[in-house]
Length: 301
Length: 95
Image (cartoon, rainbow over all chains, first blue to last red; front, side):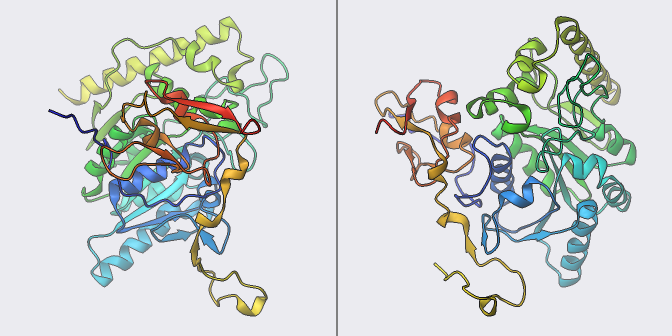
C-alpha cells in the first residue's frame, strides 16, 4: 500500500504573499493558523502594532478577510460593537476576532477587554505576545519576562535589565469570569488550530494567548524563531493549557522539561545573564509551573 | 491588477484597500535561498506549515513542495525545521 503524505493542518490560505513582516516573524504564522481554523467568515479588528503594519501599506492588503483598524485601547470594545451590529443584521455564522499585541492587551487595552469579559461579549480575543512593544522599537511592556533586555530596560549594570515578572493575564481574566481561555504557540500549529476550533462556537468571550517570536526584538537568528518558540514550551516557560469555566487543563504534556538555559542562551536579549541569574530564572519557572499543576489539580477535583 | 492611483483625484472617497500585497516582490530582500533536494524530501510538509511568507507551495496532498522565489524572504526556517535535512540554504551571489 502506498502511503500518501497528508496535510496536518487545513490547506486553505487566507493570508497573501508579499506582506511586510520581517523574515522569520511569528505573526504571519499566527494569522495563517487563525484564519485556517476560523475560515473566511471572519472579521478581524486590529489596533496599532505589528499586526496593523504587516498587512501592507494602503492601497494593498495581505488578508482575504475584512479588517477594521481601530484605536490602540479599544480592540475588545470595537469587536463587541461589530458583533452587536451582526446580531442586529441577523448574521450568525461570522466570527469576530480582536487581534491585539501584548502591549495592546495587558497595558493599553486592558480596560476594554475587562469590560468585554464583564458583558460576556461573543467575541474571540487573540493576544499576540511577542513580549515587548516591538513595532515601535522594542520598549518594555507588561509581558516582558524577567531578565530581558529592551531599549527601555538597557543592560547598563547588574540591575539594568527588566526585573518585573510577566503579567498573569490569564489569571486576571479567569478571576474576571471568562468562559474560555487558552495558551497556544506558533511552533505547535495542530494544537493552535484545535484550540481555536474548540473556542469558536462557545458563546461568550474567548481569550487566546499566542506566543510568537520576534526576530529583531529577541535578538535571534531568523531561522531559529520556531526552534526558540518550541523551546519556550518545552522548558515550561510558556506552558500550553486551557481554562474552561474556571477548570484548568494542560493541552501539551511535557514529560522531561528542558533547562531554561537552552531557551535563554539562543536569544541575544538574555545574553548578559550570569550563572546566578539563570539559576534564579529556573527557580521562578519551576515555581510557576508547580503553581499551574496545582491549579489543574485543584480545579478538577 | 488594479492601476495604482496617480493623482489625488484618483483616490477613492473612503480609504478602502483594493488589491493584494502579492505584487510586492519580497524575494528581493533575500540573501540566501532555500533549495529542496527532492531525493531526500519525505513530503512531511513541515516546511510548508512553518513558512511565514507562504512561499513553500504544495499543489495537493502527495506532491513535492516547491519554493516561490518571488516572495521567499530567505529566513531559513524551512531548512532549520526539515527533519530529513532536504533543504539547504545557498548564497544568492553564487547563482
